[in-house]
Figure 1: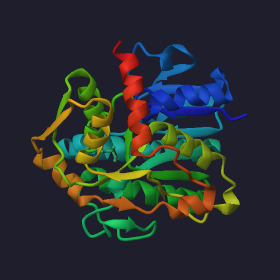
Figure 2 (figure 1 turned 45 degrees about the horizontal axis):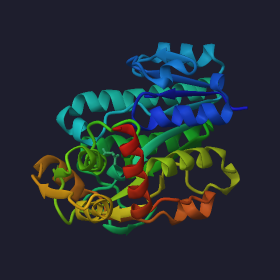
Figure 3 (figure 1 turned 180 degrees about the vertical axis):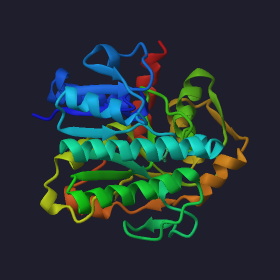
Length: 315
Ligand code: AKB
């Protein structure tokens, strides 16, 4: 039975992944950690430790104390915040990652960390972006993600650490909000649709980005971690996407449920520029071939579920 330590467990992915893994592997098999402590199910439903991932000793001690066999390292700053605080992003994103990899090497742990569509840049092919292609990002977040992918591959090749990763698109969820990302608009639009019947988008009409609904993201992490290593030609990290969309496509879907919904635009030049530097639509075929990646939700099905879940939440 797996025993997993998760960093950034109170973040957008961590909040849901922790609960799903506890359901799947048992409550005491999943050690949630985060730099902060909050009034959340993640903290009270099983083991929880406060951990600053840049503190290598504390990281090692917690992993050692609980005798874990897997580390899922999620703690990181997202793209828009990283652009505002580049030095903090470097120190946290790279410092945290190398500490997590060292713990995995020292304790012989399986390892997962997410990369992102942010690992691509303006010189990357925009459509059907291949798994192996030019990666010259122009953001601090992207620099962190490319360096992180290379570092994870290095730990696999040099030390035999079983490192695995996914290049996530924007993740959409009704549970925990994202914070500081470029793709956050695609979550905010649903909240505002229900609360105000209106959303002002900071991403421009016609700006495409890849997205994925959180249940598909969680399943893809679990599936990749359980995949037969002999079948993996790639490691860090796999392209995965379920849809390539611009704000007006979400508007059309929301209007099917909330006909009076309206969308206008007040473009934020920083986040728009980041979005413009990323692909429009990445190609997930290596993930499909090597470990059977499959997304259950397209935009229509995701919108139905988001609206239903958020309506219940706001009742
Ligand atoms: C962000 O917008 O920074 C993230 C990502 C795509 O990695 N959601």
